[in-house]
Length: 453
Image 1 (cartoon, helix red, strand yellow):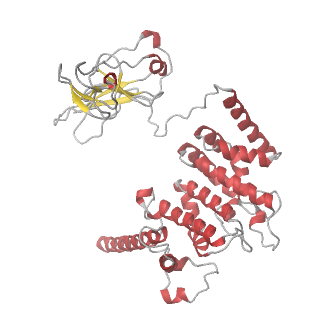
Image 2 (spheres, rainbow, N blue to C red):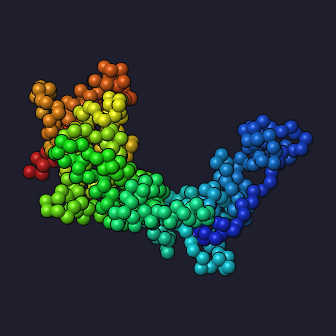
């Protein structure tokens, strides 16, 4: 059975230890090899890898361990049973001869220790032991740190005046947004810095900031039944707030987890203290106004924010319960915006909506969770004839999803833009595939109930 060894990596040790690479060079009488060529030394017959014409920069094809950590090059073969670690400062793999139960330098005792590395020696052991019965998963060593798949998020180092100013401006922007002072400048700052996973997490941890961003992204004026146009400042603020939400949760699972913690409270909250004010659970997923049009750039930003939020299972269920798929279908069936080239700009909006559906519900390769949508029972479809006779501009097209997806794919193909590989083609084919799977699962479930009887 493989043996587990626990090696804690003090941060200061990684910083202090130099990486020594045993110098191995070719014979001086031999000409320099071309860059990238592998050669063998005549003196010791050690096969070398050379990426330049400088023999001093060559290194052994098979890693030669010593008692000190050395860099392991990506194209080197690594023998088994070594002590291997990842230098968190350089990102390079390092290895040395493994010393069981090696003591830590006393001078480093008490220093902070980052995530540990568990080394598995690939020894062949077919016999189970008393400590590890056959078929049981390997147990972590005693006192091993709790596993965190996302790692520790550290505050950026403020080594320069620019980085110090950036951090100060960030916290100042949070205060401004809470107090409703210079909102526009604060939004620009937050949208720019929220891409950083540390600052994105800080945004997500603050409920008041998250609520304010959702309120700005979903202004009441955007969905008002009034025929008067939405003010330009509201459109700009909505776009920046939506982009900030999107970048806050993008590739930042800890930030998404924080927003998920706020979700129940957030969705029941309102953006106004007036009686009858609309709850956020109504406006968060709504993408198109009941009348008039909005810029394509704003709709794209709001779709991007929703797509990032849907990586959370509980938020995804809220989206489905709020008929979010029907709202996306409205986008796919819509045409026109305030852009000077509405067809081209709105096509980008439709593509983004299509990718949201593929990435979150239909394409497992892109991280989608299959089986949540479409549902064979809940999402029953009307006949093609019935769907063809409907006014597609009216709401309530959910039972014609399949028909509209096919029409969309056919239209892009006729225009010479679609066909195999196009997002509309992928959407239609993945939808058919999942519809078939859902129907098959439904039949199996019915068969199982009959057997029980």
